Each structure stands twice: as structure tokens, then as C-alpha cells.
Length: 338
Image (tube, rainbow, N blue to C red; front, side):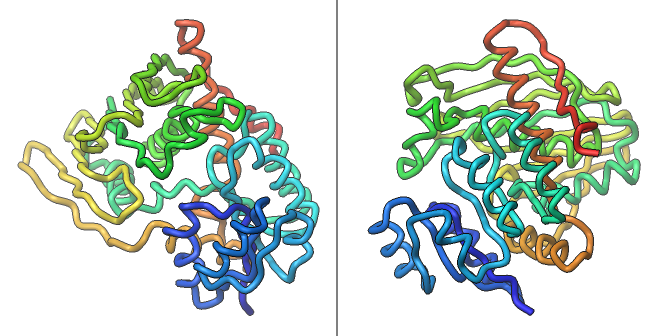
């Protein structure tokens, strides 16, 4: 039995990654696409071999589909997600799940009540590099984790420099775009939850309308681990990386904060240096495999709705800290989801 998908949003990420990831599943097919612009919908569907193009959410949800992938601008996620849940469709939603963690929780609670599979498209936890780091830490290979550093400042390609850097009302800015990913990846790799964050943001010349295009954050985790992260849209020549330092060793990963299954992970201990091997499966293909399994009642999505609430609550706290100049507690209020 196949999983028939409808795409909400004629997005770059769907074209570059998600359509292929769905079609890579033995039981996956893309049936329909919705874009509010009818001409764009028709052209996008034609270019990507999608049989049906519609320009209203109702028309999509009334199609013969089982699940939706939401990749519209951030302010639309809540209304579209709730409508899909009400229509009985499983939901895989881009991050951030909404503009506020309260709205994100509303979607997750609604999906739970309806028996709907709800996932957040946090791709990085599907990277072999990050899973190799998580497994090395869990196995005690660096002793007790003490500190972490994430380097995730990139250059936002010109074709993506629209609403992300000009529209606060759409949920633009680097914190809602990249800090959410770093929150999720830190949580996943460390197997730990953040409790407090201090953040500085900047506008270095790309963003307008009061939006930030760079951020640096200091995190404190439940276990006592401290971390720092750098997110940006404006650094053309920076490389990405992720380090975790423990009492008995360090993990040093380079070129791993990316959508591609690339990069390397070095384990450094008293015994010397060892490059960890890991599988190189496409991140989105792995995400879709887990999502399809969850629909069959086998496990859960790679990143759940609750994970999306955590990352958005972390980003909210970062923005609040930047505005107030004070450290802010991170509270996703997940008790409400029980």
C-alpha cells in the first residue's frame, strides 16, 4: 500500500530534496501540489512530474492523499497543519513548526488527539555524521561531555534571499531559520536538553526590516554541558562544524551542518586520533523512511512534533535574550502534550 503525498508549497527544498526522497521510498508517491499562485502551481507540477496542481488548501486536502509535506513560509504552518490534521492527513512540517512554541504545541496536541503522525523536518539528525557522534558519546568514548561548539554560519544563496531576510511577519531571520536546527542537533547528539540560553544577534547588511542575519548563542544543558553556536547568512567563506569535548576525549566534525551526507568526524583521545566511519545515506530519504514506518505503526518520525516544539522554544528564548540582554530559561512546556 503506497503513501500518497500532497505538497503544501511549491518550494525550493521540495524540488531539490523532498520530492526525490518521497519517490525513493518503495511505497511513496507525490500525487498533488498546492501553491496559492495557480500559474506557479501548474508550472511547478509540470516541471516535477506531479499529476495534479491546485491553488487552494481545501482542494489539496480533498485530493486522494494520505500525508502532506508543508514547506510554505513560517506564518502559514499553523493554519495549514491544523487543517491537514482535521482532514485526517499525516503531517511532515518544515521547521520552525510555527511562529510561537504555543502554536507548535497546539498542532502536536491536535495530531495526538486525532491519531495522526506528525513530524518536524529537522534533517540534520538524519546525517550519519551526527548519529556517529551521538553513538560515540553514548558509548562513553569521550568520557563525560563537558562542552560543545557548533559552527553553522553560511551564505544564504541569492535564490533564497526573499522572505527570510525581509519579512518579520513571515517568520524570517536567521534564528528561526538556523538556530532551530542547531538546537535540535545539539539535543540529538548530546542526548540532553537545553535549559538556558544567552544570545546576541546582528544585522550585518543582508537582512532588513529589523531582522537578524547573524547570531551567537551560549547554551546550558540539564547535565551541566555548556555549548556555543554561531548562526549566520552572511559568511561566504566559512566552513561548518560541530565539536563535543569530554573528560576523556573530543569529537571534531567538519562540514557536517549541511543538507548533503558529507563531512568527517574525528575522535581524539589519549590513544591518538581515529576517523569515525558512518553511512552516507541521503538525509531526507532516511527521514521519509522513518516517517513511512511511523505511518505503518512502526516507531516514530526521525524528528517528532515534540522535537519541533523544543527547537522553536529554544529559538524563542534566543530572540528574547537578544532583546533583553539577559539569559533566558528554555521551557517547551511539553507536559501539556502528555
